[in-house]
Every structure is written in C-alpha cells, then in structure tokens.
Length: 278
Image (cartoon, rainbow, N blue to C red; front, top):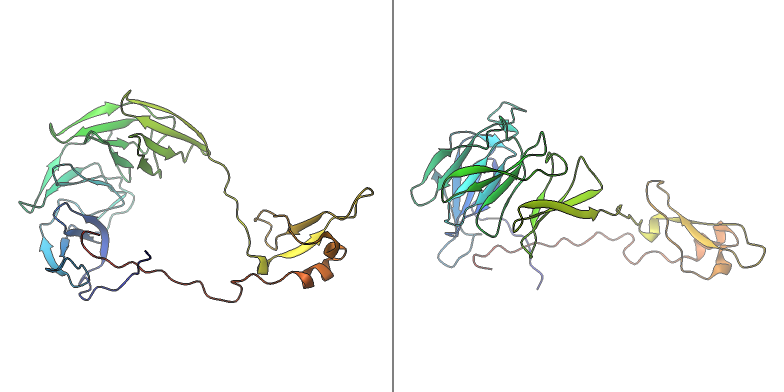
C-alpha cells in the first residue's frame, strides 16, 4: 500500500537535525549544531502529524555527523562528531548516553583512539555496538551492560565515510570507500572481517527521449548493427530493440523511434503518512 508524506501540524520551533525514534514511541530530535534536544510525542490516537514538541535535557556536546544507536535497554548513545557546536572538523573524541526515563545525559568513555569524528557504527544482534576508526583500520565494540569499549578486529581499510548495515544473517556489510570497489563483512560469531566481494559499477540508462540513435556501418555479411550513443558520454550505451532497417540513416532512425511513455511528464511524488505503530 502506497503511503504519502504530510506536513506536521506543529512544525518544530527550531532547526531540526538528527532524529531518532525511541522505544517509548517519541522522536528525539537534535537542534542543528547545538546541545539542545526536543522530543515529538504522538497524540492519543498515535498520530505524529498532530504530535507535540517538548524540551529535553541538553547534552554535553553539540556534535554534527556522529555515530548513534538506540541501545537494547531503551537508552540512546551518541559518539563523536565531525563538527562540534560551531567548530568544524574537530573529529570529536567523546561519547554520551541519553536516558529518556530520567531525561538526562551521561558521559561515557571512548575507544581511546584520540578521535571518533563521523565514525560509522552498527548495533549487533547481541546488543553490542561495533564502531570503526576513520583514520585507520581499527574497530571497537561497546558493551552497554558493562559500559566498556574493547578492541575489535581490524578491517581491510579505514572506515572514513563508510556506511555499515546489519544484514538478516547477523553480519555487518560495508562497501569500502578507500578500498573501492571492494566490500567486506563483519562476522560476529568469529569476530572477524571477511571479504564480501567487489561492487559492480553502476549502470546508468538515459530515458529514451533524451537519446539519439546512431548506426554502425553495414557489415559485409549481414544487416546493420543498431546501437545507441547517449547524448552524455558518461552514460553507457544500450542496444535499440527496433527493426534494423530503420538504422540505415541516423536521421530516419531518430524519426521512427517513439518517445518514452513518461517523456514530458513530471514524475509523481510519493508521500509517507506518519502514524505511530505502523
């Protein structure tokens, strides 16, 4: 069933930045580049559209671009920050946890690298958080039950600008940035990083209405071999499945190709309706 986006009746009275859905159903939102946080609480029917905003406790830092995760006990962890308040490129080495019941922030330790910055992180099936170093191949694992960081296995490349994703089988997959097009996976059962193969180059296809056809010369032993040359050289070519006789001349071929069904029409916008519990 298709959804749609609808504006909130009560727009945030601040410059909203990072948003996280807490286990109590509220949405915790940071004010951009500050230590100020607010929560959006749905109405009695569970609608966030008619929700209300409430001020929450201020954090110790005001980071931008940082690692974060909801912990299994319902608390919210943030670590690092490429920027802090109005200071850019500081690669903040700090971490803290928000307790929504007590409405308070508590500073915690860090892996001890001397930086965290905009490090990638991922919650593991066992409730522990694995995080990567942006400057080398180190990783660290946080255990919320003991409030401790322990060294994790080394990756194949540094973690800067990467995105880590938990897969259904419990492994964490990452497309390497420094090592592109390589990919790797973290296997928690063996506490190791293993190769996940290589990424295939993305293939871009131009809408038919923006292409112009060209033809190779007629082979001595057969009919013409039709091809498309994209109008933008960065886009790969695609065979034209039209009768080959139309490609004797590029001009006649161009006139015989029907326009793409969506040519000249704006793409429809899909909006998502926000309702608690859906």
